[in-house]
Image 1 (cartoon, rainbow, N blue to C red):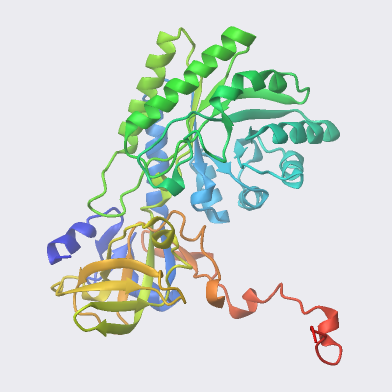
Image 2: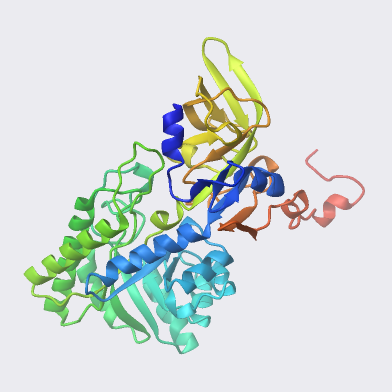
Length: 451
């Protein structure tokens, strides 16, 4: 990494220099944030979140189509995020009763929540219906029956969509593909039409449409176009065979984010316009009215709006082989390099502008050899205590974080034009143990283990 690349990196949205010529994110000095909140810490730009939401809305507004933009809560969801999404007129895609609870506690309206999941329990479905969640996405045959029983018991009507596997493969990591034939999600498209009578004969379930999601971190519109073609042909078959109108078509999310300067780029505006154009074109050929179009962006809204701050602790050099910079976080706060071989860019905050002179590997502090965040990056000469910033860490970092090795999760901080505040407090050792219980028999005059 050269100095020129350093400057290219901080040309990313949200970065600037403050009045003391120090690196800032959404108007907040990174060194001051680290001193105030400690490291590691997750930092999110409120302005960037709002801008990404607004870009989706503006792009669809220009397309003359009925639409709904659902933020994919699995990427990052806390109460403050739910509050922001509501103010930006977004809808919300959730995957558990826990996310429903979190959203409602953040003031998000239940009628704009869509409940996903490939194994929703009866308790979760009951939870959703009791709180008047707007739409349930049916993922399999078993769930259809369970939902009808619960809706009948509660004497409620509920809107449903059905998730379909369109059989579209994508060029992305195998672990984040979801649209191929062999998937744990959804009903195979070849089986759906035979299954359809079971849907429309349920007394308490109101069929609204079909849903698919083909994968994540995508930049190739061809995969979306193929999925749209398969889904619209299915809508046509439903109408022809059963004389039932499909009101809504949800084509899922998956638009990628730029983790490194080498990553491809597809703007939200281009993505929306190309997708809508293709949907209109296919519907016209099939002589179908264009249904309400839904999309589920997550990563493309939140990824680049988040960064992570680490402090460099130990520095270990294996002469002739490798030099490690070991930070105070790692795979528990960012599991993506270990899970998906994800690539990141970073720089030393307090040495910005200094010449990059050494190739190093940035590793975490967890008891796994695979706890490596960046393998081979060129940085200035590092010292213990230097502050490192990782870019594009807003999606799936806090959401997938853990307490591995007994470490508390970092705080989550929101910044906005020089203001900063906590969205989630950093965990404590006491918090880690608050639900621990020693069974009664272990406290009776010694242990009673195997002899």
